[in-house]
Image (cartoon, rainbow, N blue to C red; front, side, top):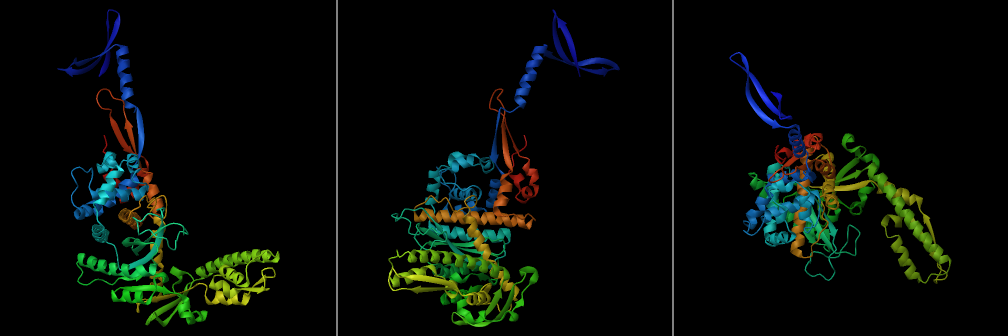
Length: 568
């Protein structure tokens, strides 16, 4: 191919000629007219204009695609729709799809339903889910959730639990149970949400109405297997039997689904907050094994066992932890009990008690100064009651001595002293010690300790739900019982998805917290380049950002290429 110039009436025109040998002689086989130099310049300018995008935008991809992949593997939308029924003709999406998307949002970027459509537009999810933002109006969410009864919700929760166990091969032989509550901003006069009640707030917000939540979580990955929402004024101990009964029923169904001839043994781990004679009986009556703890005050004699009688449990796994075991009657039944002592816990309790003691001494010092000025008005009994509130700690009362003199408000004086001998006895007798109780007679002490420490998996789940950035219970913009329970369901589903994702990453050698994992996935974005139109619709090209290569292992774990834009 070669350029060929022709001059016509003094003007230069250009042609593109192709030459070839024909019968051994050079011959022109094609000629294409290009025009004048100005014509060629215009063609080049037009080509450059088309090759440079007129504008571009960046969309979220990696985190939402990974979550969507897990939702698809579990067939969450399909499970919900199989219970609720087919999509209405006038609905933009099914009930199952709406709730699956609500869980996706809770994992990635918790927002209100009012702001959901705007968030959806900032992601590439509309492309790979085939769900446009136009059908995600907040009113359509409400219409969808109102079709779902609480009885149907219980069936859905159970079926999703079965799907998790079967799809991800979860080990459910060891489970941790714990409870917490969440503060809400529901108006005091609102009678449409009896589940929200004032109680003992674990977030220290006694002025707000609370919603209680109990979780049963697998040791294998910390996956919630069972959730129970209850009024915030109900003590945890009263909800324990309800959860144990539900767990026993669910476990039998899981075993049946798996084709087991008999339900395999399950060990439930719980702390002293759920203790009562009836609760211990309920666990054993449900054919569940357990590992729990009892307050040292109930087996005070164990605390006096000398340190020389305790043996190191497992130095590699538990450092300096020592233990001894015996049998004691606990809540009416003789059981195996294990006394443990942790140097780490001991040191923390020493530091914590030092702060508690210093705070009490400071408060009492200020009270002494007020009394010395003769400005106090409390009677002797009132002063004694006030001092009792300041020293309202059993450890403090053992160590801190407070003497009151004077018979009238004007003559009252107080003096304080620390009984160092009593403090040393307290540290030696109590600090660092924990008393475990279990139905496992043949487990090594190390196995019992390891099981009890799995309680932290449940606690971590609650901390995750209180993270305002990802997998969060807040914001909760609901004020009716039904909507609150649906919201709780989507939050627990989000926690299940997030922890399944972390487990998948862990199994592949990627060790990250949930937030770290989501941050890495979120860095994989999708860039949309929009080119100027030369007639017809503008051309659009999509491509993933270079982080898809930076985090190639995560991309492979969550099969992100399945949801990536097709190359144009």
